[in-house]
Image (cartoon, rainbow, N blue to C red; front, side, top):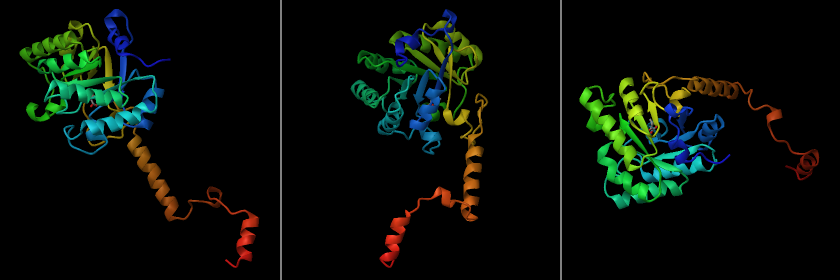
Length: 281
Ligand code: KIV
């Protein structure tokens, strides 16, 4: 089975009978293998990397170099899932040529498409990336790279005018060439309006059930991330507790000298042992 392509994803509208898209983040080879083996359609190497892997408080700290390093680790696993790479903050804000070069770095690292945050202000950059034959996924609503401008990680589009602007932004993004749009942190009715208004699939996170697909952050859905519990996260495992319990049992075994056993150790052969004895060691 070949990699799921951007045009194939673009055709996945639920209203046309398509199955809902599944996207999960991954940032390294083991997480990519888990997500791909579970049959997800898309692996997002998100700039959430900054928060869930690198320990920052927001996503603003990661660079194109950081992203490329993690995209390459995911790509080395050759997943059937489509790899989307986030363009980090300030990598698509300065000039069109720099934007295209940054997108190309992520594609050369192994991504099949790039994602960027923002509405109509980003249209010229989206068009330039598409002109370079790189598929682009849009991302509107609660855009974490705008944390300071938004005054925090806040649900967007709660007022009628703001909701109308989101619908317009989604239409413009689709018109500019985005093959899919992430809708993050918007009321369920707004997500439904946007999904109805565009020809490309919407992929929701904190946007309710009416999108054409859903995305969650790997560490949230597996329960590795325990510091925050946003309302929209459903935890399917508690791997932080399971992992801590395993490390605790390892520590107990080391301290009580029950690990390692002789069966878990390497041994010299009898002749080599004898030779050592003959040499007086
Ligand atoms: O970086 C990320 O993980 C994302 C998702 C929250 C959509 O952009």
